[in-house]
Length: 268
Image 1 (cartoon, helix red, strand yellow):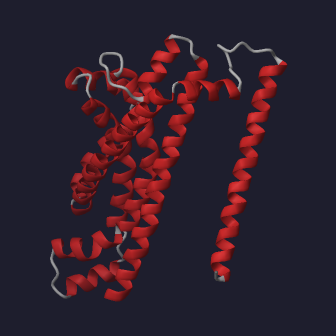
Image 2 (cartoon, helix red, strand yellow):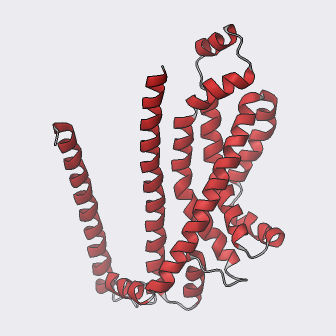
């Protein structure tokens, strides 16, 4: 093992140890607060009670996590496709960028809980509606990042392409698109965590009128039944799903950017 790899391994161990210490402190404080104030289980269960509830409801939690994960991935992929297309349009037309970009911002600023009921009326209590809501939540970071990447090409390089007679589409394919790859991955990483949030928020509404089983649906049902221990376990499951989404995108991003850099160096 090289010294660089050894240092990297030590950094990972230190990071894991620090995360474990913080988690232990949080669980300890949580347990102490419940014991000190003699809080009822319905108000705040102990960590062990939450763990027992998670074990008891493990099948429901597993199915719900898979359903929410599928919706989050599908919505994120839709947002990537639509977002990149819009970013290309914005990069090629300043007029369209000035006219339409504020509406993309509007999608980010309008609370998704205000849009979700309308989407249910238009699309129904379906998985498709969950995907649409998730895509809307994920859209802005991708459009914003990719548009910035497409417009960030240096003036000297653009002038060089024009000097050799390269048209708009050649400049887009051979100059702007390659320069936007790192910006695209940054936008996807930002949206990966948002995708889980969007899916769960949509499930709060969709789960009321269908047998759709997602984490948001479970949370709604367990809240009505005051099953606080199971509800907390569902919250932890959603947090783990968000971390898994972000971590997976981060690993894919690191791999692709490394390969892309090596390809660019070879081509250059």
